[in-house]
Image (tube, rainbow over all chains, first blue to last red; front, side):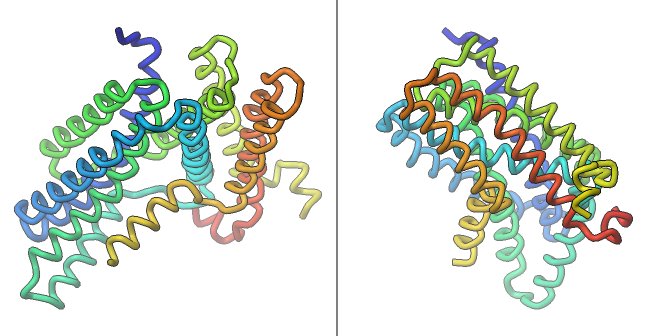
Length: 253
Length: 77
């Protein structure tokens, strides 16, 4: 029987990570639909979802043949690399070192890019639009698939993690259908920061389990790890925001 | 073919956003693994090295990145 106190971190991580990715994919699909109508957008999106489903159906059963500790170690390493990468970028964006992800700007750029491509190849309008939607959904969807497998497979939580991702998809589609514009008000960087914290915590947890380590407190150790990464992210953001106040860097300069 | 290349680039970018940070994390995992698997000390020591080492690497990476940004870019941001 599923214990939700155990499943909640996996569901939460899958939901939040999927929310970020689906918002990004939605922006591209909306740009395609605005310029060429919903038919090529829907066809491209459907083809991408079919490719993603095929990938999961093809690779999913293979996971059962990998020894659990090896699977936990491999997934843990990939999760930690991905989580730290997300966290680093979110900290740099939050500190103003690199620009924030702007869905409105991406929508405008994607529309302009697609418009230019369409003008150059009049005969293949819908094909270009459909391929743009396919590519956007496929690339963002790959990250969703990996995150769902990564946070779910190590602890037998694939179904709850999938539900978290599905919930994010439904939520974005519902809100998107209502507002019919890029979801630029979603606090994407804050979400990425939170997801980076959670993925990093999961990564360390699974690496330890993969090495055969019994973490004190079992699953509750995840909360401690998340708190440590949260503290590091906040401290790192403060340092990146104002390096002049960092005595080590003043010496270095 | 272009799509496959972009998928491959996306997959690589997912895990290897910053080469120096990635290498440092992999080295840290190797050290933690060696402590757990190869030495006779309490395996939890390896775990502690990992959970304290990763945040330290993150902060060091952020400090390095913020130093590398040009003053004009910072004021513009």
